[in-house]
Length: 345
Image (cartoon, rainbow, N blue to C red):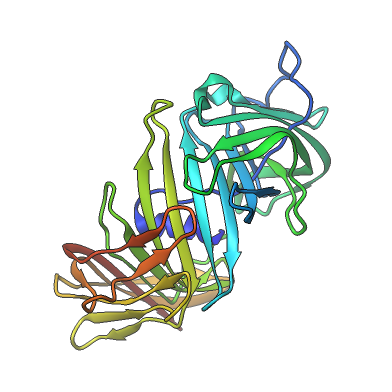
């Protein structure tokens, strides 16, 4: 699971999706047959190098499934000044399930958004598989086709300094990324649920910025970050919205089990700055047995979904973005979320 997906889950409002699909020539009048009705198509894991109007370099990603209303387009740039982090802006659109097609016999896929993304974006991409492999599933099955993605991918960002990114001939070939099309037939992937981790969220909603963070391990990857995100509903097309967010790598938050207070500190001069505490509310504790890789664990969970989220005066956790200015996570009362899990043998 990538960091954006984790941030999305933590923030309780969808933040970025994974990456990418690309296509090249105009689609034929008759679309190629899609995978069997029992399978789910997923296009992701690619990136294209683009520039915004202010001259900044970004990676553009496109992701979709053949389920309606799942198309996302994102741009992300790394930030290293004041701490390792990133800035990201992601658009979500309501497109029909038929926008994504894939023929397993030829390895050819297409993603065509049509008018569903107008006037914000135009997506007309072709995917060509070059190899495939079976995914690891505890039940069900999944085949992952890796290949090339190119075609038209343009987004009118509507952001100061953003302009229009992409173009009519875009290749999703950023080093380290590889476009793939997954054909999923009820695959259940092996997941380690015997986790030790700490997460929090200020849990605001609407147009307000929200702060969230995670310290722990997900699918074998260690995470220690704080993110700030804001959701903006677009005037058109219908149902479209954008998530603006930034995150920075941080030290683990401090948890005082006796007082029930979680203290969070970010960077002093990075893309995300400030600090906060979550306190008050009602703590709930549960315990359950867990088994992973043949080993048994006991997982203890402490949760609080009614905490008060606050920051010292003038030190609100703030994302300093280049395209949307400062996103400030302001204090909330009774809506903060704390989740602490420990696993022991």
